[in-house]
Image 1 (tube, rainbow, N blue to C red):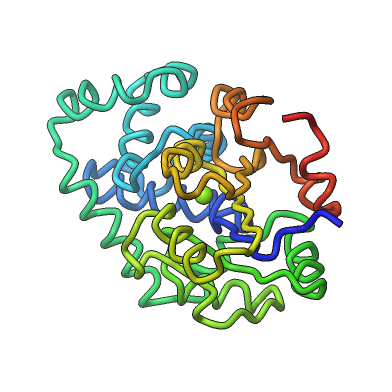
Image 2 (tube, rainbow, N blue to C red):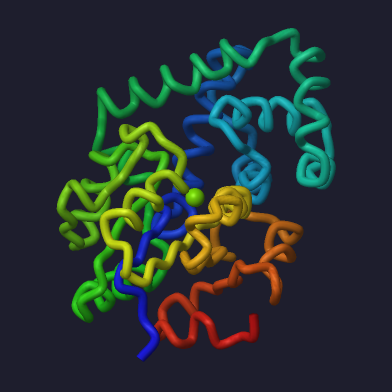
Length: 261
Ligand SMILES: [Mg+2]
C-alpha cells in the first residue's frame, strides 16, 4: 500500500481558505495608508482581488494590489507581471513598502486582539479536507502542519474543525525558518520515514528540490490554493512535483501519484 508515514501540509491555500480574511485585512490596510473617502470597499473589488492573490509573496503587497486595481491597472496585467508593476506602483503612490507592511500588521493585530472569533470566522476549510486529514490520522499517518501562519491560530482553527493536533505537530510562523529547513529537521528525526509535503506555492516546493538531502521527500502542488495557471504548468511529469487536485487529495494516497512522473 502506498502511503506516507508523515504527511506535511501547508495550511493557507491547502487546508484553509483565507481569501476573505486577506481581502478584509488588505482593504483595511489600504484605507489606513490611502484614506479613501468611503470606508467600505467598492462593489466587486473583493471578487477581483481573490484571483490575484497568487501574485502576492508578502503581506504588504496586498494593499498595493488594491491600489493597482483602483488606479486602473488591468487584472490580467497584475497577474502577468506583478513583480515589474510593484516598483512602478510604489513610485506612483509615493509610498514605501514599510508603511504598507506596518498597516497590514497593525490592522491584523487589532482585529485579532479585539475580536478573535470574528477574525477566525473569515477563514474556512476547503471542502473535504478535514475529513481527509481525519482519515489519514486514523490510518496511522503522522500529520504535520508547516505554515507561515502563527501556530496558535492554526491550532484554534483546526480545533473548530474537530481536528486536535498536538502543538509540536504544528510548525508555524514562530519557528522562524524556511519550510525546507523544517522538513530537514523532520527527516533527521525520522530518517527512514516516507515524508510527503503538500504546498500551494511552487517556489516553496522548488526550494525543497534544491536541497540535495531532501531528494526523497515527495512533493505535491495543491492546485486549489493560491497559484496561477503558469505555476501549475510547472508541476508537470518529470518535474519532480506532482500536481494534486482537491478531489484527488480526498482519495487514497495511491491516487495522488497515479499520473506518470
Ligand atoms: Mg500556502
